[in-house]
Amino acid sequence: MDYRTVPEWAREVSHPEKASAARVYDYLLGGTHHLEADRLVGAAIQQAKPAVPLQMMTNRAFLGRAVRFMVDAGIKQFLDIGSGIPTVGNVHETAQMRSSGCRVVYVDCDPVAVMQSLQLLAGAPFATALEGDLTRPEEILAELATAEIRRLIDPQEPVGLLLMAVTHFVSDEENLHDHVATLREWLPPGSFMALSQGAVESYTPEEIAQIRAAYAGQRAAIPTARTWEQTRRFFDGLVLQDPGLVYLPQWRPEPNDPSFFNDDPRRSGSHAGVGLRAR
Image (cartoon, rainbow, N blue to C red; front, top):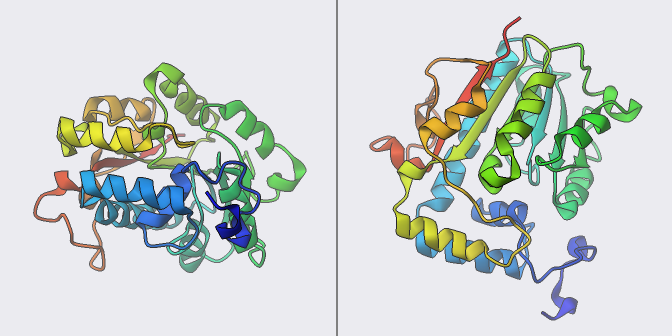
Protein backbone atom coordinates (compact mmCIF):
# COMPACT_ATOMS: atom_id res chain seq x y z
CA MET A 1 0.00 0.00 0.00
CA ASP A 2 1.17 3.52 -0.83
CA TYR A 3 0.83 5.27 2.55
CA ARG A 4 0.62 8.60 0.72
CA THR A 5 -2.86 7.57 -0.42
CA VAL A 6 -4.12 7.12 3.14
CA PRO A 7 -6.58 9.95 3.92
CA GLU A 8 -5.77 12.44 6.67
CA TRP A 9 -8.35 10.99 9.07
CA ALA A 10 -6.68 7.56 8.88
CA ARG A 11 -3.02 8.55 9.29
CA GLU A 12 -2.98 6.98 12.76
CA VAL A 13 -4.11 3.57 11.52
CA SER A 14 -1.37 1.17 12.56
CA HIS A 15 -2.15 -1.33 9.79
CA PRO A 16 -4.03 0.41 6.96
CA GLU A 17 -3.50 -2.67 4.79
CA LYS A 18 -5.83 -4.63 7.11
CA ALA A 19 -9.61 -4.26 7.06
CA SER A 20 -11.60 -3.58 10.23
CA ALA A 21 -15.20 -4.60 10.88
CA ALA A 22 -16.24 -1.00 11.65
CA ARG A 23 -14.87 0.36 8.38
CA VAL A 24 -16.21 -2.54 6.29
CA TYR A 25 -19.64 -1.85 7.83
CA ASP A 26 -19.27 1.83 6.94
CA TYR A 27 -18.36 0.90 3.37
CA LEU A 28 -21.33 -1.43 2.97
CA LEU A 29 -23.64 1.28 4.33
CA GLY A 30 -22.34 3.71 1.72
CA GLY A 31 -20.23 5.77 4.14
CA THR A 32 -16.91 7.52 3.57
CA HIS A 33 -14.73 6.35 6.48
CA HIS A 34 -13.06 3.32 4.93
CA LEU A 35 -9.79 2.36 3.25
CA GLU A 36 -8.78 0.24 0.30
CA ALA A 37 -8.50 -2.90 2.42
CA ASP A 38 -12.02 -2.38 3.75
CA ARG A 39 -13.40 -1.88 0.24
CA LEU A 40 -11.73 -5.07 -0.97
CA VAL A 41 -13.25 -7.10 1.86
CA GLY A 42 -16.62 -5.42 1.35
CA ALA A 43 -16.53 -6.22 -2.36
CA ALA A 44 -15.69 -9.87 -1.63
CA ILE A 45 -18.61 -10.07 0.82
CA GLN A 46 -20.95 -8.56 -1.75
CA GLN A 47 -19.77 -11.07 -4.33
CA ALA A 48 -20.61 -13.88 -1.93
CA LYS A 49 -23.94 -12.33 -0.89
CA PRO A 50 -25.10 -9.39 -3.05
CA ALA A 51 -27.88 -8.57 -0.56
CA VAL A 52 -25.45 -7.70 2.25
CA PRO A 53 -25.64 -3.87 1.85
CA LEU A 54 -29.45 -4.11 2.02
CA GLN A 55 -29.09 -6.32 5.09
CA MET A 56 -26.90 -3.65 6.71
CA MET A 57 -29.52 -1.00 6.00
CA THR A 58 -32.20 -3.27 7.45
CA ASN A 59 -30.09 -3.78 10.57
CA ARG A 60 -29.67 0.00 10.88
CA ALA A 61 -33.44 0.40 10.66
CA PHE A 62 -33.88 -2.11 13.50
CA LEU A 63 -31.40 -0.11 15.56
CA GLY A 64 -33.53 2.99 15.12
CA ARG A 65 -36.73 1.20 16.09
CA ALA A 66 -35.12 -0.36 19.15
CA VAL A 67 -33.78 3.00 20.33
CA ARG A 68 -37.14 4.70 19.87
CA PHE A 69 -38.86 1.84 21.71
CA MET A 70 -36.48 2.21 24.63
CA VAL A 71 -36.84 5.99 24.81
CA ASP A 72 -40.62 5.63 24.81
CA ALA A 73 -40.19 3.16 27.70
CA GLY A 74 -38.29 5.79 29.70
CA ILE A 75 -34.64 5.04 28.83
CA LYS A 76 -32.49 8.17 28.78
CA GLN A 77 -29.00 6.66 28.59
CA PHE A 78 -27.49 4.21 26.12
CA LEU A 79 -24.37 2.04 25.92
CA ASP A 80 -23.63 1.02 22.32
CA ILE A 81 -20.92 -1.68 22.18
CA GLY A 82 -19.49 -2.44 18.75
CA SER A 83 -20.84 0.88 17.56
CA GLY A 84 -18.54 1.46 14.61
CA ILE A 85 -18.63 5.06 13.39
CA PRO A 86 -21.78 6.98 14.41
CA THR A 87 -22.71 8.56 11.09
CA VAL A 88 -26.19 8.56 9.53
CA GLY A 89 -28.84 6.99 11.73
CA ASN A 90 -26.68 7.11 14.84
CA VAL A 91 -27.99 6.43 18.32
CA HIS A 92 -27.61 9.83 19.95
CA GLU A 93 -29.45 11.73 17.22
CA THR A 94 -32.18 9.07 17.00
CA ALA A 95 -32.69 9.11 20.76
CA GLN A 96 -32.53 12.88 21.12
CA MET A 97 -35.09 13.37 18.36
CA ARG A 98 -37.42 11.30 20.53
CA SER A 99 -36.48 12.94 23.82
CA SER A 100 -33.93 15.73 24.28
CA GLY A 101 -31.21 15.08 26.82
CA CYS A 102 -30.71 11.39 26.04
CA ARG A 103 -27.09 10.39 26.60
CA VAL A 104 -24.96 7.87 24.69
CA VAL A 105 -21.59 6.19 25.17
CA TYR A 106 -20.26 4.50 22.04
CA VAL A 107 -17.72 1.69 22.43
CA ASP A 108 -15.65 0.06 19.71
CA CYS A 109 -12.47 -2.03 19.59
CA ASP A 110 -11.18 -0.20 16.50
CA PRO A 111 -9.12 2.81 17.67
CA VAL A 112 -9.65 4.59 14.37
CA ALA A 113 -13.42 4.19 14.68
CA VAL A 114 -13.17 5.68 18.17
CA MET A 115 -10.99 8.55 16.92
CA GLN A 116 -13.44 9.31 14.13
CA SER A 117 -16.37 9.03 16.51
CA LEU A 118 -14.84 11.57 18.88
CA GLN A 119 -14.31 13.96 15.98
CA LEU A 120 -17.90 13.55 14.84
CA LEU A 121 -19.16 13.99 18.40
CA ALA A 122 -17.14 17.14 19.11
CA GLY A 123 -20.31 19.24 19.13
CA ALA A 124 -22.46 16.69 20.95
CA PRO A 125 -22.29 17.28 24.74
CA PHE A 126 -24.43 14.25 25.56
CA ALA A 127 -22.37 11.64 23.69
CA THR A 128 -18.82 10.30 23.69
CA ALA A 129 -16.83 7.30 22.47
CA LEU A 130 -14.27 5.05 24.08
CA GLU A 131 -12.16 2.09 23.07
CA GLY A 132 -13.31 -1.26 24.42
CA ASP A 133 -13.83 -4.85 23.41
CA LEU A 134 -16.90 -7.05 23.95
CA THR A 135 -14.54 -9.86 24.97
CA ARG A 136 -13.30 -7.73 27.90
CA PRO A 137 -16.53 -6.41 29.43
CA GLU A 138 -14.96 -5.76 32.83
CA GLU A 139 -12.68 -3.15 31.23
CA ILE A 140 -15.68 -1.45 29.61
CA LEU A 141 -17.52 -1.37 32.93
CA ALA A 142 -14.44 0.05 34.65
CA GLU A 143 -14.39 2.89 32.10
CA LEU A 144 -18.04 3.56 32.81
CA ALA A 145 -17.18 4.09 36.46
CA THR A 146 -14.81 6.98 35.71
CA ALA A 147 -15.98 10.51 36.46
CA GLU A 148 -15.88 11.51 32.79
CA ILE A 149 -18.27 8.76 31.73
CA ARG A 150 -20.45 8.86 34.86
CA ARG A 151 -21.83 12.18 33.62
CA LEU A 152 -23.40 10.24 30.75
CA ILE A 153 -24.18 6.83 32.27
CA ASP A 154 -25.61 6.69 35.79
CA PRO A 155 -25.37 3.02 36.91
CA GLN A 156 -28.29 3.54 39.28
CA GLU A 157 -30.68 4.36 36.44
CA PRO A 158 -31.97 2.07 33.64
CA VAL A 159 -29.70 1.75 30.61
CA GLY A 160 -30.30 0.81 26.99
CA LEU A 161 -27.57 -1.70 26.06
CA LEU A 162 -27.07 -2.07 22.30
CA LEU A 163 -25.23 -5.05 20.79
CA MET A 164 -25.90 -4.56 17.10
CA ALA A 165 -24.20 -6.89 14.62
CA VAL A 166 -21.26 -7.33 17.00
CA THR A 167 -21.70 -10.74 18.67
CA HIS A 168 -21.10 -12.54 15.37
CA PHE A 169 -17.54 -11.15 15.41
CA VAL A 170 -16.80 -13.12 18.57
CA SER A 171 -16.45 -16.90 18.49
CA ASP A 172 -18.00 -19.27 21.00
CA GLU A 173 -14.46 -20.32 21.97
CA GLU A 174 -13.96 -16.78 23.36
CA ASN A 175 -16.64 -17.36 26.03
CA LEU A 176 -19.01 -14.99 24.28
CA HIS A 177 -22.11 -15.91 26.26
CA ASP A 178 -20.23 -15.29 29.51
CA HIS A 179 -19.18 -11.83 28.31
CA VAL A 180 -22.75 -10.92 27.34
CA ALA A 181 -23.94 -12.29 30.70
CA THR A 182 -21.50 -9.97 32.51
CA LEU A 183 -23.07 -6.99 30.75
CA ARG A 184 -26.62 -8.25 31.33
CA GLU A 185 -26.00 -8.68 35.03
CA TRP A 186 -24.55 -5.16 35.29
CA LEU A 187 -27.72 -3.64 33.87
CA PRO A 188 -29.90 -1.91 36.50
CA PRO A 189 -33.49 -3.14 36.81
CA GLY A 190 -35.72 -1.56 34.18
CA SER A 191 -32.94 -1.65 31.57
CA PHE A 192 -33.21 -3.10 28.07
CA MET A 193 -30.78 -4.96 25.83
CA ALA A 194 -31.21 -4.89 22.04
CA LEU A 195 -29.20 -7.35 19.97
CA SER A 196 -28.89 -8.44 16.36
CA GLN A 197 -26.87 -11.48 15.29
CA GLY A 198 -26.14 -13.04 11.90
CA ALA A 199 -28.45 -16.02 11.37
CA VAL A 200 -27.29 -19.39 10.07
CA GLU A 201 -30.76 -19.82 8.60
CA SER A 202 -30.23 -16.84 6.27
CA TYR A 203 -27.19 -18.17 4.39
CA THR A 204 -26.12 -21.23 2.47
CA PRO A 205 -23.02 -23.04 3.74
CA GLU A 206 -21.19 -21.79 0.63
CA GLU A 207 -22.08 -18.16 1.37
CA ILE A 208 -20.95 -18.48 4.98
CA ALA A 209 -17.63 -20.01 3.87
CA GLN A 210 -17.03 -17.23 1.32
CA ILE A 211 -17.83 -14.44 3.80
CA ARG A 212 -15.56 -15.97 6.42
CA ALA A 213 -12.81 -16.29 3.81
CA ALA A 214 -13.16 -12.58 2.95
CA TYR A 215 -12.32 -11.67 6.56
CA ALA A 216 -9.41 -14.12 6.88
CA GLY A 217 -6.13 -12.37 7.62
CA GLN A 218 -7.76 -9.03 8.44
CA ARG A 219 -7.90 -7.09 11.71
CA ALA A 220 -11.61 -7.86 11.84
CA ALA A 221 -12.52 -11.15 13.44
CA ILE A 222 -14.00 -13.84 11.22
CA PRO A 223 -17.78 -13.71 11.67
CA THR A 224 -19.78 -16.59 13.13
CA ALA A 225 -23.41 -17.05 12.10
CA ARG A 226 -25.64 -18.59 14.79
CA THR A 227 -28.93 -20.43 14.98
CA TRP A 228 -32.09 -18.97 16.53
CA GLU A 229 -31.54 -21.13 19.63
CA GLN A 230 -27.93 -19.98 20.04
CA THR A 231 -28.94 -16.34 19.73
CA ARG A 232 -31.85 -16.77 22.14
CA ARG A 233 -29.31 -17.65 24.85
CA PHE A 234 -28.01 -14.07 24.84
CA PHE A 235 -31.33 -13.05 26.40
CA ASP A 236 -31.21 -15.50 29.31
CA GLY A 237 -32.58 -13.76 32.40
CA LEU A 238 -34.28 -11.04 30.37
CA VAL A 239 -37.92 -10.75 29.35
CA LEU A 240 -38.08 -10.71 25.56
CA GLN A 241 -40.37 -7.97 24.35
CA ASP A 242 -43.01 -8.68 21.72
CA PRO A 243 -42.68 -10.03 19.10
CA GLY A 244 -39.73 -11.93 20.60
CA LEU A 245 -36.59 -12.99 18.74
CA VAL A 246 -37.39 -12.62 15.05
CA TYR A 247 -35.78 -11.64 11.76
CA LEU A 248 -34.84 -7.97 11.45
CA PRO A 249 -37.87 -6.69 9.47
CA GLN A 250 -40.29 -8.47 11.78
CA TRP A 251 -39.37 -6.57 14.94
CA ARG A 252 -42.02 -3.86 15.36
CA PRO A 253 -41.91 -2.60 11.75
CA GLU A 254 -42.65 1.06 11.04
CA PRO A 255 -44.18 2.60 7.89
CA ASN A 256 -40.94 4.21 6.68
CA ASP A 257 -38.74 1.13 7.11
CA PRO A 258 -36.82 -0.35 4.17
CA SER A 259 -38.98 -3.01 2.53
CA PHE A 260 -36.18 -5.07 0.96
CA PHE A 261 -37.04 -8.33 2.71
CA ASN A 262 -40.70 -8.03 3.62
CA ASP A 263 -41.58 -10.89 1.28
CA ASP A 264 -39.00 -13.20 2.90
CA PRO A 265 -37.67 -11.85 6.24
CA ARG A 266 -35.23 -14.75 6.52
CA ARG A 267 -33.17 -13.11 3.73
CA SER A 268 -32.51 -10.09 5.97
CA GLY A 269 -29.56 -11.98 7.43
CA SER A 270 -30.02 -11.57 11.17
CA HIS A 271 -32.19 -12.40 14.14
CA ALA A 272 -33.05 -9.46 16.38
CA GLY A 273 -34.72 -8.86 19.71
CA VAL A 274 -35.05 -6.59 22.73
CA GLY A 275 -35.04 -7.91 26.29
CA LEU A 276 -36.06 -6.22 29.54
CA ARG A 277 -34.25 -6.68 32.83
CA ALA A 278 -37.32 -6.80 35.03
CA ARG A 279 -37.39 -5.08 38.40
